[in-house]
Length: 112
Length: 115
Image 1 (cartoon, rainbow over the protein chains, first blue to last red):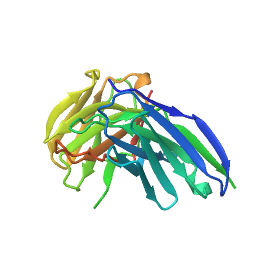
Image 2: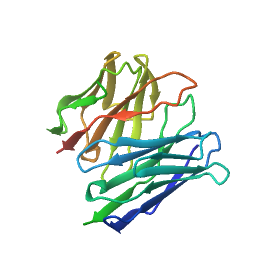
Image 3: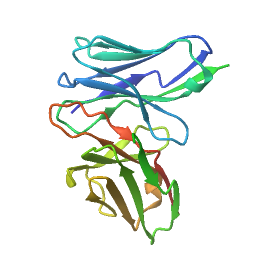
């Protein structure tokens, strides 16, 4: 089955700096990679996703890159703000399957 | 309406109680999911319903009993739970259409404490 590894487990950055979270996956059949943000006491919220036919996707301050050959994908947050503080989960998915395979999560703290 | 709602937000129950968690969505999604999330861990898939039929049961103990009365509602019936079942229970929904990558939308969860 699929195995998704995520690093780092914790990340502290100064407000305005960039944050990068990296994930690797094991199953080359995975072709959809969402990122979720989970704030304290809330459910995971989809913030950005990327499909395997695309190398990079951007949405304002958030970007995701995918390297299919190396089987890794990364989340980039620029100009971080205190409200970006949360736990971020990457996930991998295969078309036609229902399972999302989650990474272990990264706790991001943005220091004002 | 792009929301998944869950009730109750918090639930405290004894090991002999019977209770139910409820989930509702009105996005026309035909796949609905129950996840269990322990502190500082990712969500773990418990059950998947597609077109109101149970399609995945990830070897969950029988003290958890899911039910999908219609395409918008998902219940999780709880009976004789153990303290280690205390967790955040998340409901999610997505389109179910083979060949489509199904974005899953999560509800806010029910925080369950078993005494």
